[in-house]
Image (cartoon, rainbow, N blue to C red; front, side):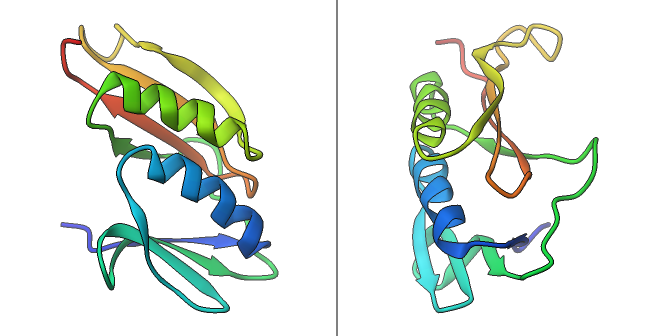
Amino acid sequence: MLHHISLGVRDLARAAAFHDAALGALGMRRVFEDDEAIGYGYAEDEDLVCLKLRADAAAPGPGFHLAFGAPSRQAVDAFHRDALAVGGTCNGAPGLREDYGDHYYAAFLIDPDGHRIEAVCKTVA
């Protein structure tokens, strides 16, 4: 249903460092970039997430977040750990969220521009 989503950022280099770490832990990579945008995905020129440099960028308000599927619980852990190391803010450490399901393993972060993102894995181990 969705083709891609764009996030406005005020500092492209700072945002890229965060998303390189967070999305890289989930298997994504930069699939295009120029002076005003960086796209992340799995295949060249097919971005799923795009960072767009905007001087007046602001994250959506409370209640909005992006949840990315993770291939494993270890990937969720790496998403959280690696992104914290480059300026992310913890919004929920990796762990089971039994309120959401018996196997819902997730971590939550806030990126340097205030976007709330999650990585989730629903496998048994």
